[in-house]
Length: 396
Image (cartoon, rainbow, N blue to C red; front, side, top):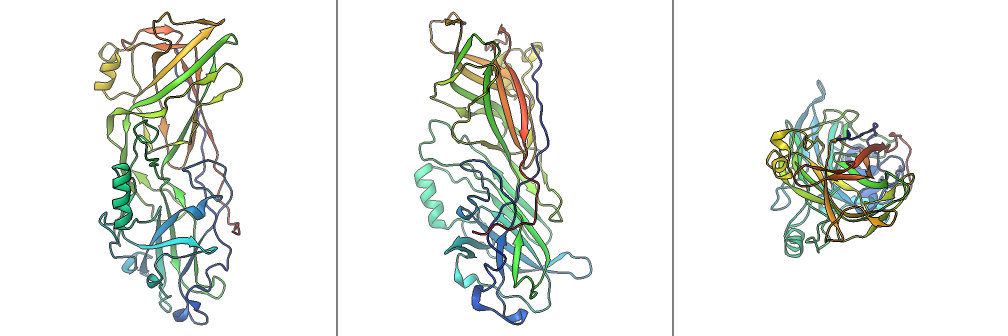
């Protein structure tokens, strides 16, 4: 088989933009000394372009987040005692004070959660987005979709983790429109009230998942491909992320356990691909979101994993592509069916906060027994930068 080509570049974690410097300075009408001033929040960053379920400066106000804060040990900077957000707020045991965007500013979802600065004591803040659900919202989502897809977290003075598991968002059976969540966190340490900051805590959110999109082109000018369905098989669905100790470093994902099964890229489509130069968009709805990991690709050239069934048993990754391929207006595959299913080994490494673009170059593939059909499909990978963080504010 021809070797799968992956050309991935680094992508910086994106910053999200929110309100202006003074937007929350008047929360609670606190002015004057630090003991009179309410703690306010805003989100800073720069612009990035993306779509749908991915959170950007353009749609950041559609999301929300929960905040947990601790008093700070002035000797070593460590977290001491809970200052805000200790209590569990729902049956999922999510904690924190919820903040959302309403009436043109970031504000406490529940006015009774309003907190004030504690004199001269400095605080360490942690935030998780999306924020918590009420038990009523949990029940409604369960009734509508049969599942609740949200992050859970354990943030205390010694442990700071976020757990999340993705699901097959674009499957035909997902008729409720349930989406994977763009999970993010933010850290703001050593915070206190000053006249310059007006009592507002600035959060810079970072994505913890990987974003994946697909494109396609043909190997030859006289070739035409119509794609009905693409699936990714055999990878890890969920794991736990440990937050970094500082806002300018990255945390770590526990290695997810690979799971036998498939996620849908597209289904029920008729996507025409007829150029070897200009790639056609395959991810027609939105990017896919995955827990960062390295996939173990199918090895059809090894006797123990030659067939698709053996690849499944070994939990090796591959693409399942249902399509029809024409060359000079003649069907390439002699089949009683208009569409045939091809299988392609899929090698990938996904890192936190990066967007990966895979371009399938159609020329053939493998059958379920691991036998090559014409030339195997090649897969070129590249990555797009999310902008490097800046301290510029975007007014809403």
